[in-house]
Length: 321
Ligand SMILES: [Ca+2]
Ligand SMILES: [Ca+2]
Image (tube, rainbow, N blue to C red; front, side):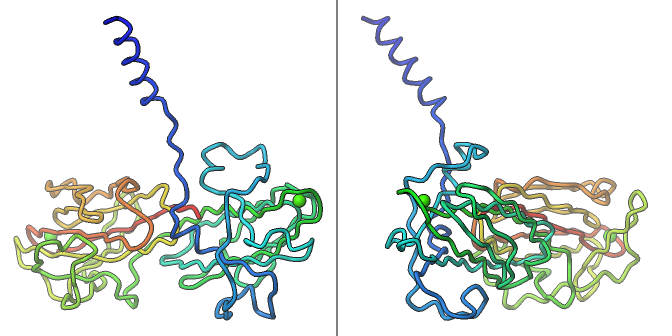
């Protein structure tokens, strides 16, 4: 009896350990796709009035293409208008997409049962007339910083099943841009300064470094700094937002600091370098685990030993939607 209990216990533990946990798209992102059975001019562009457009439905009985893994099927489900197939007429879809940084790469995979045409910011990027055929679109130059619209028109022409699947990977980077005023800084900081909820309205704006760029392995690292010079052994705090309109799947921050730094992402300490000789060397820190969809905070504390104090901090985030 004791042995049977032990066997059952081991079986239970093994079952827990090996159970596949697929991640689905968060509901707030799934509901961004809207659909309509009719549309007027400009329906696939920014600024269109979507009154009457409704959230799409998922979990359809549509066969997935063979290239999609089970994990991808869980994340990127077929969608459609809740009314159903629309008697073979066009069904319209659109999703607003906020791009916070600069687009380094954007790849879309689109598939429909049975036909589709896909648009980015009103431009037709491609389509398919063969049911279930996947098309891959590189749309890096079509996306812009700020508001964008992804759109598709699809049609069910045969069979019982219908659906549209849009799978996207977008990589953004955030170089320091002086005019953007997105990096804020202060020599003093209160509790919670590394978190989203902290109010930095009274903080100043980071400015381009006044000292020559730091040269490492013949690459120039153009830093930013505080408006006033930091004294020896002075500290400065820097923070900025990263708004992600998708699920971050990988992220790196390249950082170097003069003369030492602590890097936080959403309040979590991700890198620390107190050795001045090492702090000058750029380091790539993996921060993907600390990011989430929506607003994120990148925060860095710099301590100066002597001379100028400055920071190079460049995040790159790949997200899916
Ligand atoms: Ca069909
Ligand atoms: Ca220094």
